[in-house]
Image 1 (cartoon, rainbow, N blue to C red):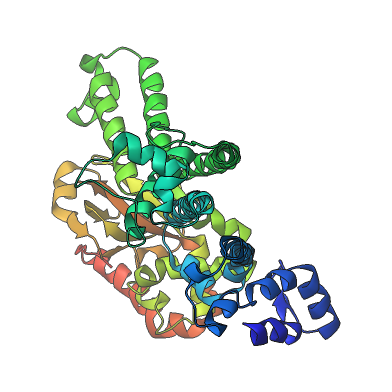
Image 2 (cartoon, rainbow, N blue to C red):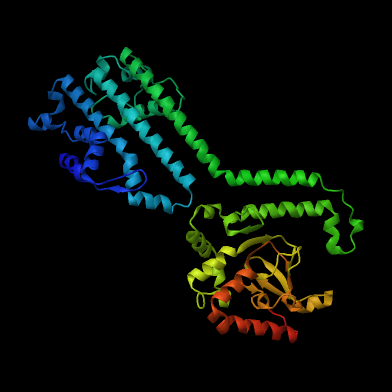
Length: 469
């Protein structure tokens, strides 16, 4: 420990902003102002006198033992270095970054802090009895102390017994019990101060415990709120939906011309559909039905432009691979990250119809990659039920709709299409502008793949044979 204390004069340290300092003058000045004194005190061999004379502690005067143990307590001041060591440890930083929930990690942190504080307070409380009794043997029964008071009022044969040099565990259990009930302000009263010295130290311990407990409770409340934030948002959205439903016009199903229009006039049917959709969003951890990447993950807005594109790419990489001319075979990561930043993740409830056109009432033209759910899809304009029945086909998770049609020119009737959602569905929508921009920058992707998709879309519709492209 002495060698380590000296070596710190040549050891680089890390500034709060993460920079490493190698300047020797700054290193030594920083070390002398911070941890030098505590490291020096901690390196003093307090057991040296006992080892030098090959005697046990009982052979030395009580005041020597007490001073030695109090000097040992000063070594605990080195714990002030723990936060600095944790911040500067690459292993700890990497471990924190790998955790999926920082709130749960904070919960573990404050629980550990509470255990350590309880342990230190228990050791101090037990040492106070030793100071007054002189030893942990018969002295505990001959001199007034809190252990004697507890022993006279609570001890029975076969119970926990704190008297005796070999009863360290029982004494620790008693001390730990008093420590925990003091920190948590429970105070059963079966373990309490007895002497004037114990009343003084007990008051100081309770004051410090109150401050610690207030800090931990405040921190845990923040952690609990962070863990429940999604449930709280869901409850608020349900309340907002209920308020909105209460303002709906009264139901009048007789005004519906078709069965498909019935829910537009029946408040009860539409209200149930609304609530099911909000519940679906909660189950899939999504707060909005139509989100671009930065809305789904707000942290993206705090990143640099390049990191924003790469983050978006990492989120949708496997889905872009399903579109041949947007896959890694033709586009590099930089080009695909540009496309990914324009993508949107969309949620749809059962019964909803998505139209692919440039009308204001539609979502616009683009490619739909099914992430989950099932739907009927049709290409082109469908004018009758029999035509829709003949041309519709089913698309499910992992399939792509519109990869060829999105390349057709504006105004082409065959470029339009529709998706009728059967179950709760989530899709990745790749806007047409992003697709065309990528193909314009990479002519090889157009010549070797996309133009064949374009020709296939035209010939397929001319032959009246629709299928997913």
